[in-house]
Length: 219
Image (cartoon, rainbow, N blue to C red; front, top):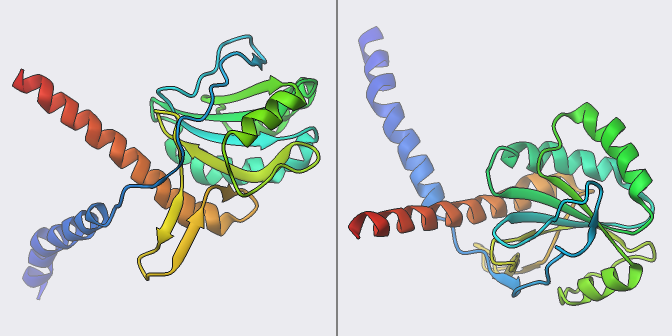
Protein backbone atom coordinates (compact mmCIF):
# COMPACT_ATOMS: atom_id res chain seq x y z
CA UNK A 1 0.00 0.00 0.00
CA UNK A 2 2.75 2.41 1.00
CA UNK A 3 4.70 1.46 -2.11
CA UNK A 4 1.73 2.34 -4.31
CA UNK A 5 1.32 5.72 -2.62
CA UNK A 6 5.00 6.50 -3.12
CA UNK A 7 4.81 5.52 -6.79
CA UNK A 8 1.71 7.67 -7.22
CA UNK A 9 3.44 10.69 -5.72
CA UNK A 10 6.63 10.18 -7.72
CA UNK A 11 5.15 9.49 -11.13
CA UNK A 12 1.44 10.26 -11.42
CA UNK A 13 1.22 13.62 -9.63
CA UNK A 14 3.96 15.29 -11.73
CA UNK A 15 2.15 14.19 -14.93
CA UNK A 16 -1.18 15.48 -13.66
CA UNK A 17 0.44 18.80 -12.70
CA UNK A 18 2.08 19.09 -16.09
CA UNK A 19 -1.19 18.43 -17.94
CA UNK A 20 -2.98 20.96 -15.74
CA UNK A 21 -0.52 23.76 -16.43
CA UNK A 22 -0.08 22.82 -20.08
CA UNK A 23 -3.82 22.93 -20.65
CA UNK A 24 -3.89 26.34 -18.97
CA UNK A 25 -1.27 27.69 -21.34
CA UNK A 26 -2.96 26.18 -24.38
CA UNK A 27 -6.27 27.74 -23.42
CA UNK A 28 -4.77 31.24 -23.58
CA UNK A 29 -6.05 33.36 -26.42
CA UNK A 30 -4.64 36.68 -27.54
CA UNK A 31 -6.24 39.47 -25.55
CA UNK A 32 -7.96 41.78 -28.08
CA UNK A 33 -6.86 45.37 -28.65
CA UNK A 34 -9.54 47.85 -27.63
CA UNK A 35 -7.60 50.99 -28.62
CA UNK A 36 -4.37 51.12 -30.62
CA UNK A 37 -1.41 53.30 -29.61
CA UNK A 38 -2.85 55.35 -26.77
CA UNK A 39 -1.07 58.70 -26.24
CA UNK A 40 2.08 59.01 -24.15
CA UNK A 41 2.21 60.67 -20.73
CA UNK A 42 5.95 61.36 -20.70
CA UNK A 43 5.57 65.15 -20.77
CA UNK A 44 3.37 65.33 -17.68
CA UNK A 45 4.49 66.29 -14.17
CA UNK A 46 5.55 63.71 -11.59
CA UNK A 47 6.31 63.86 -7.88
CA UNK A 48 10.06 63.39 -8.32
CA UNK A 49 10.41 65.06 -11.76
CA UNK A 50 11.34 61.73 -13.34
CA UNK A 51 9.88 60.98 -16.74
CA UNK A 52 7.15 58.34 -16.81
CA UNK A 53 6.42 56.64 -20.13
CA UNK A 54 4.04 53.93 -21.29
CA UNK A 55 6.18 52.72 -24.20
CA UNK A 56 7.99 49.42 -23.56
CA UNK A 57 6.15 48.86 -20.29
CA UNK A 58 3.24 46.66 -19.29
CA UNK A 59 1.11 49.26 -17.54
CA UNK A 60 -1.91 49.31 -15.27
CA UNK A 61 -3.42 52.74 -16.00
CA UNK A 62 -5.82 54.49 -13.64
CA UNK A 63 -7.57 57.85 -13.20
CA UNK A 64 -7.91 59.02 -9.60
CA UNK A 65 -9.43 62.49 -9.88
CA UNK A 66 -9.34 65.29 -7.35
CA UNK A 67 -10.43 63.29 -4.28
CA UNK A 68 -7.52 60.92 -3.80
CA UNK A 69 -8.46 59.62 -0.35
CA UNK A 70 -11.87 58.55 -1.62
CA UNK A 71 -10.09 55.80 -3.56
CA UNK A 72 -7.96 54.37 -0.72
CA UNK A 73 -9.91 51.12 -0.67
CA UNK A 74 -9.51 50.75 -4.43
CA UNK A 75 -5.76 51.22 -4.08
CA UNK A 76 -5.67 48.47 -1.46
CA UNK A 77 -7.57 46.03 -3.70
CA UNK A 78 -5.36 46.73 -6.71
CA UNK A 79 -2.19 46.54 -4.63
CA UNK A 80 -3.02 43.26 -2.93
CA UNK A 81 -4.51 41.37 -5.87
CA UNK A 82 -2.67 42.59 -8.99
CA UNK A 83 0.38 44.63 -8.00
CA UNK A 84 1.71 42.11 -5.46
CA UNK A 85 1.62 39.42 -8.14
CA UNK A 86 3.69 41.35 -10.68
CA UNK A 87 5.71 43.89 -8.66
CA UNK A 88 8.99 42.06 -9.34
CA UNK A 89 8.37 41.79 -13.07
CA UNK A 90 10.99 44.01 -14.70
CA UNK A 91 8.79 45.87 -17.21
CA UNK A 92 5.63 46.18 -15.11
CA UNK A 93 4.34 49.49 -13.74
CA UNK A 94 1.26 51.22 -12.36
CA UNK A 95 0.51 54.72 -13.67
CA UNK A 96 -2.14 56.86 -12.01
CA UNK A 97 -3.32 60.05 -13.73
CA UNK A 98 -4.43 62.98 -11.56
CA UNK A 99 -5.24 66.68 -11.92
CA UNK A 100 -2.39 69.05 -11.14
CA UNK A 101 -2.72 70.27 -7.55
CA UNK A 102 -3.38 66.87 -5.98
CA UNK A 103 0.30 66.21 -5.29
CA UNK A 104 -0.10 66.73 -1.54
CA UNK A 105 -2.89 64.17 -1.33
CA UNK A 106 -0.79 61.65 -3.26
CA UNK A 107 2.21 62.13 -0.97
CA UNK A 108 -0.04 61.53 2.03
CA UNK A 109 -1.41 58.37 0.41
CA UNK A 110 2.09 57.09 -0.37
CA UNK A 111 3.67 57.93 2.98
CA UNK A 112 0.84 56.65 5.15
CA UNK A 113 -1.42 54.16 3.42
CA UNK A 114 0.63 52.52 0.65
CA UNK A 115 3.73 52.50 2.86
CA UNK A 116 1.86 50.22 5.27
CA UNK A 117 1.22 47.76 2.45
CA UNK A 118 4.89 47.49 1.47
CA UNK A 119 7.03 48.61 -1.43
CA UNK A 120 5.73 51.08 -4.00
CA UNK A 121 8.32 50.22 -6.65
CA UNK A 122 6.80 50.74 -10.06
CA UNK A 123 4.02 52.99 -8.80
CA UNK A 124 3.92 56.25 -10.75
CA UNK A 125 1.68 59.29 -10.44
CA UNK A 126 1.44 61.81 -13.27
CA UNK A 127 -0.27 65.19 -13.10
CA UNK A 128 -1.87 67.29 -15.83
CA UNK A 129 -4.52 69.94 -16.30
CA UNK A 130 -8.19 68.86 -16.38
CA UNK A 131 -8.35 69.64 -20.10
CA UNK A 132 -5.27 67.50 -20.80
CA UNK A 133 -6.68 64.60 -18.80
CA UNK A 134 -10.06 64.82 -20.51
CA UNK A 135 -8.41 64.98 -23.93
CA UNK A 136 -6.16 62.03 -23.13
CA UNK A 137 -9.04 59.93 -21.85
CA UNK A 138 -11.19 60.71 -24.88
CA UNK A 139 -8.42 59.35 -27.10
CA UNK A 140 -8.81 55.98 -25.40
CA UNK A 141 -12.21 55.73 -27.14
CA UNK A 142 -13.91 53.97 -24.25
CA UNK A 143 -17.56 53.42 -23.44
CA UNK A 144 -17.05 54.30 -19.77
CA UNK A 145 -16.63 57.96 -18.81
CA UNK A 146 -14.75 59.88 -16.13
CA UNK A 147 -16.87 61.35 -13.35
CA UNK A 148 -17.00 65.04 -12.45
CA UNK A 149 -13.77 64.72 -10.42
CA UNK A 150 -11.95 63.17 -13.44
CA UNK A 151 -11.93 59.74 -11.81
CA UNK A 152 -13.09 56.23 -12.62
CA UNK A 153 -12.92 53.09 -10.43
CA UNK A 154 -11.74 51.16 -13.49
CA UNK A 155 -8.13 50.48 -14.35
CA UNK A 156 -6.85 49.53 -17.80
CA UNK A 157 -4.18 47.22 -19.20
CA UNK A 158 -1.76 48.89 -21.63
CA UNK A 159 0.77 46.68 -23.41
CA UNK A 160 4.34 47.57 -24.35
CA UNK A 161 3.25 49.03 -27.69
CA UNK A 162 0.75 51.32 -25.93
CA UNK A 163 -2.27 49.31 -27.00
CA UNK A 164 -5.16 49.18 -24.55
CA UNK A 165 -6.15 45.54 -24.17
CA UNK A 166 -9.38 43.98 -23.00
CA UNK A 167 -12.14 41.61 -23.99
CA UNK A 168 -14.48 41.82 -26.96
CA UNK A 169 -16.28 39.11 -28.84
CA UNK A 170 -17.50 35.91 -27.20
CA UNK A 171 -16.26 34.14 -24.10
CA UNK A 172 -15.57 30.40 -23.95
CA UNK A 173 -19.29 29.74 -23.44
CA UNK A 174 -20.21 31.70 -26.54
CA UNK A 175 -21.64 34.60 -24.56
CA UNK A 176 -20.95 38.10 -26.00
CA UNK A 177 -18.45 39.95 -23.80
CA UNK A 178 -16.88 43.39 -23.86
CA UNK A 179 -14.48 44.56 -21.18
CA UNK A 180 -12.31 47.65 -21.56
CA UNK A 181 -11.38 48.09 -17.90
CA UNK A 182 -11.50 46.33 -14.54
CA UNK A 183 -13.30 47.68 -11.49
CA UNK A 184 -11.03 48.15 -8.47
CA UNK A 185 -14.15 48.13 -6.30
CA UNK A 186 -14.97 44.51 -7.19
CA UNK A 187 -12.39 42.13 -5.73
CA UNK A 188 -13.93 39.26 -7.68
CA UNK A 189 -13.39 41.09 -10.98
CA UNK A 190 -9.75 41.84 -10.21
CA UNK A 191 -9.07 38.33 -9.01
CA UNK A 192 -10.93 36.43 -11.72
CA UNK A 193 -10.95 38.55 -14.88
CA UNK A 194 -8.06 40.99 -14.58
CA UNK A 195 -5.71 38.38 -13.16
CA UNK A 196 -6.50 36.05 -16.06
CA UNK A 197 -5.99 38.80 -18.63
CA UNK A 198 -2.69 39.86 -17.07
CA UNK A 199 -1.51 36.26 -17.37
CA UNK A 200 -2.20 36.41 -21.10
CA UNK A 201 -0.21 39.65 -21.50
CA UNK A 202 2.72 38.26 -19.52
CA UNK A 203 2.60 35.00 -21.46
CA UNK A 204 2.65 36.92 -24.77
CA UNK A 205 5.61 38.94 -23.55
CA UNK A 206 7.61 35.89 -22.48
CA UNK A 207 6.78 34.03 -25.69
CA UNK A 208 8.06 37.00 -27.71
CA UNK A 209 11.25 37.09 -25.66
CA UNK A 210 11.81 33.39 -26.23
CA UNK A 211 11.16 33.75 -29.96
CA UNK A 212 13.64 36.64 -30.23
CA UNK A 213 16.20 34.71 -28.20
CA UNK A 214 15.90 31.68 -30.46
CA UNK A 215 16.15 33.87 -33.56
CA UNK A 216 19.34 35.44 -32.21
CA UNK A 217 20.85 32.00 -31.53
CA UNK A 218 20.12 30.93 -35.10
CA UNK A 219 22.02 33.95 -36.41
